[in-house]
Amino acid sequence: MKPRSLRVRLLLSAAIAIFLALAAAWMAMTVLFERHIEHRIEADLIRDGLQLAAALSVGADGTPALEHEPGDSRFFEPASGLYWQVSTLQGALNSRSLWDQHLPEPKNATSLQWKSRTVEGPFNQQVLLVERYIRPERAGADVLVQLAHEQKSLHEAREEFGEELALFLAILWFILSAAEWVQVELGLRPLRHVRNEVETLKRNPRERMAAAHVAEIEPLTLAINELADAREKDLSRARRRAADLAHGLKTPLAALSAQSRRAREAGATDAADGLDHAIAAATSAIEGELARSRAAAIRAAPSGDTTIALPLIESLVGVVEKTEFGARLVFEVNIPEELRLPVAGEDLLEIAGALIENAARYARRRVRITGQAVEGGVLLVEDDGPGIESEKVAEALMRGGRLDEAGPGHGLGLAIAHDLVDATRGAITLLRSELGGLKVTVAWRAPELVTRGQES
Image 1 (tube, rainbow, N blue to C red):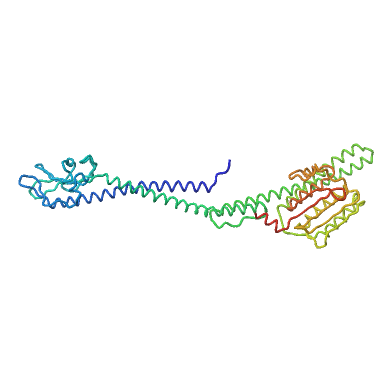
Image 2 (cartoon, one colour):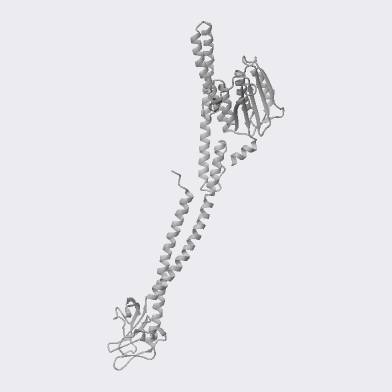
């Protein structure tokens, strides 16, 4: 499963939260709008009711009378939705808009204040009704004053307002979502910086993350730096233990070699051969472990050091010529004096030493060492020995293989050199030499190309 994206989770949760908030705002605002309109209508009805009360009188027979009616034209249009009615026990007057209808009987009406309620009114309309008892004369009878306004127009106004408000809030939702996207991008930018620094830390374990400019990220950078410190210490401790163990085994192996020689001199040839094979296997394992430890140290501490190749190669050739297998060979060194290879001196010493020694062990008469100033630099080591079978080249340079699994014809030194070259960010290839044996080519990229590759 792919890991869930924090960006997607933040954007999705923010979009849902904004939508729910705006939906709740839409519902609340439509209710508030409806209540506001109701209050305005109620206020208008009470105002018209006061006009009726001001013009109201009661005749001798107890029937109500009006000096003048409210001037709203809707009171004169039948079924217009705006109605008034004044009534006593002896009779009633009503607006022309009521026509042959009448307003409902009073309910909880008092003479102290206007009462409002929503009821089923004339012409099967739901109306907002306000009512109050008025006493036009101090000693006269009470008169019930009622005014009503149909609710249909109120509901229509609320629906129109709700539709327009929904469109506005939808646009607002998109705007707020875009603003949230910008906020999330800005908020996650420090994490992108942390990721880039972690990539740098992966390429160079000795690097450490810079102090975070954001307070919330600082604990994370500190924890990563502490983890990197602990990892580096563990790796360094493990490499030292492996190197100490390998060096510690060399003395017992030397003693066993001496015992093997004595056994051979005493005539125990079979026992000496078996002992020599066991010593050779143990020596290969030790040399491989030392080379692996050295390669790990090179990877952990990359540098921009360069080394003049010719003096170092000549010193190596001088050492190999003194060995039993090197004394019978002719060494050709064709390296420009000014050639610099982008490798630390001690690293180049181990790489070139392994290649030259390997070539000398399997050469018949000649070993040729060439240097070229191509890109970062190229080192070629050739011999006139048996070479390597083409089908075994990939096996010899297989990435991740054991250093002591080199097949016949190329020796352990070649596998060690391959691992060290890989650690110094070089490339090694095996071809057939013009001399008839193996041609080993080691090529390094220029330092600036290495830097660009890491940044990309």
